[in-house]
Amino acid sequence: MKKRTLILLMALVFALAACGGSPESDGNGGAEQPGGGNQVDAVQPSDAEIAAAYDAAVEAMMWFELGTMPLEGPSDDRGGAKVSYPGIETLDDLEDYLLGLFSSDIVEDLLPGRYYEVDGELYAIDAAKGGNIFKGEETYEVIRESDDSIIYRVTVEDFDPDSTDTFEVIGYTVTDMVYEDIDGAWVFTQFELVR
Image (cartoon, rainbow, N blue to C red; front, side):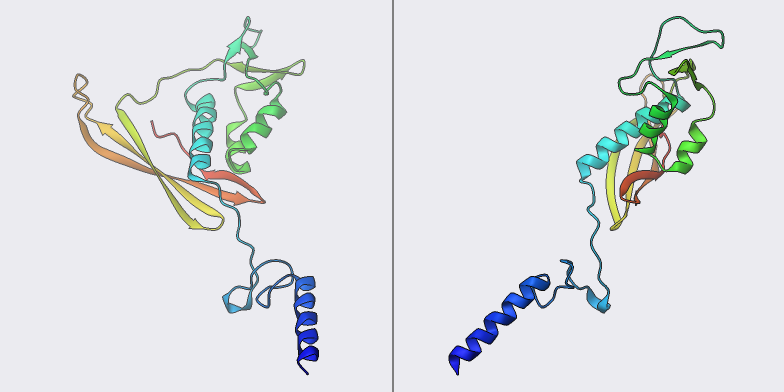
């Protein structure tokens, strides 16, 4: 009798292993969730990865709002010059790079304008304006709202415009950047420069 029970128990263990593991398994390797639904948790980026994405997004947004990508060579007949940035040689390259940082809605708003192609090479019309000098140090907070949505909260010091010698802090501006998993890629769906 004991031998028969042991054989049945071993057969049950092998059957469970073939179906995906444990009695709590859904058969596809994912743990069964309360309420009967099966969910696979999205892999969220680390705080360091989010900070690096934010830094890259700030640089890219500055190419449109505060300046232009690095340029080289003489101006062409439109007043632009060739872009000199490793890995971004065409308008398609620029669009692909931006889509790795931002949602398609943001990219669509950014692209029309100063960037264009000449003989398959990326050119830009140089435009530069300074940032807000009455903004100070930034601090950051990661708020994990759900498996596929993260708030990257940026708090920046506000300086008193009348204290240009001392730059006295008179308040803070808080801006939430929304970082979301869209079709398996983490991108900013809400983003703005804070200075």
